[in-house]
Image 1: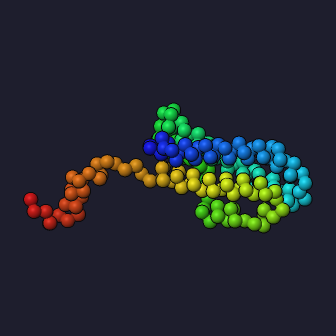
Image 2: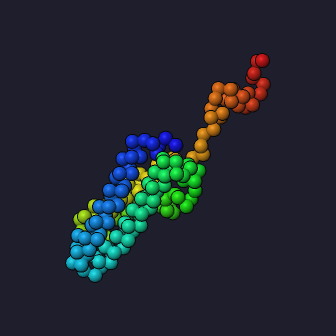
Image 3: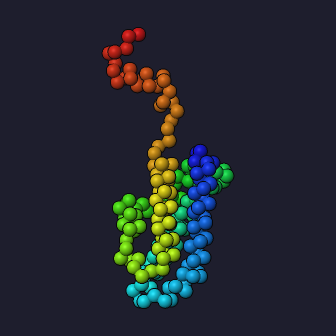
Length: 164
């Protein structure tokens, strides 16, 4: 699996872990203070968003750590492909887009929470795409794509056309 050895993975890993730390720092500090100043409905929205945000970030961090374990030969690609190591239950793209664009729930909330939520949703979307590319397609068998195999497949498909 080349991806885990790539610069792209290193960048996503650093970005994801930085976002986890930044969000945790915000929610434990400035965010907690800001939440105290919200009215009841805004405070409920804040609590719901912060819980979903924390859950999403833990899914991202877990996935990144599993991929790092694959890179460091602590886990096989086949193990990492198991459902228990994949991202949480798949959401439809429309659900994720509506979550990113949902303005009603965000009205009156601290700008930093809204920013962290949007960044996390974008990173999650990228990782969902990568996860799908890595694990949802069957691995290619090299023999299927060599010239002899292709000629044999053509001969089977068109049995009367070979001029041996």
